[in-house]
Length: 178
Image 1 (cartoon, one colour):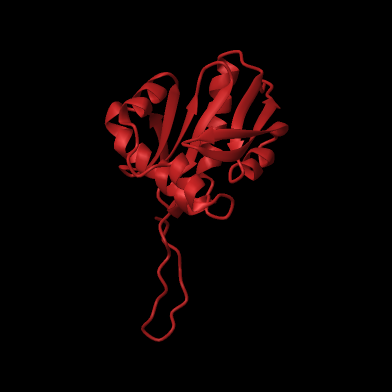
Image 2 (cartoon, one colour):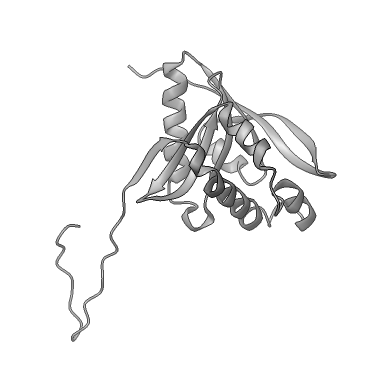
């Protein structure tokens, strides 16, 4: 931390918060429970404005299907964002342009973590020769993806656990930087 001169008020000296470094790394199978916890917290805490309690429970049940999660995560490249040794977000990318499972722990929402993860996937996609990214964004995620240059291709309704959830098929053209 930099040594910053701070104003002194009597014997009180305000503390300067240290900004911890965020590191990205590949998903490891031992991350599974943390990934599911982040997903569940993000869905239930950030989605409450857009979806009903029944829809949220269907989307992120309290008893997740661990094998389904393992299979899904193993089928793509997954990057995790860590602060120290704590996983605070993750993103999945299928190698052909599909961005899947972009979630950040609610305590770290709106701090640039999702942007960092998205930038890393864009770089991977360019290296893979992909020129168009696509995603299926929830109502919660749509503004983030729009801010990253994605446009809505179609509005969709998906049935999960007997509940209909609104989402958006979105896409973005990416160009290699020289």
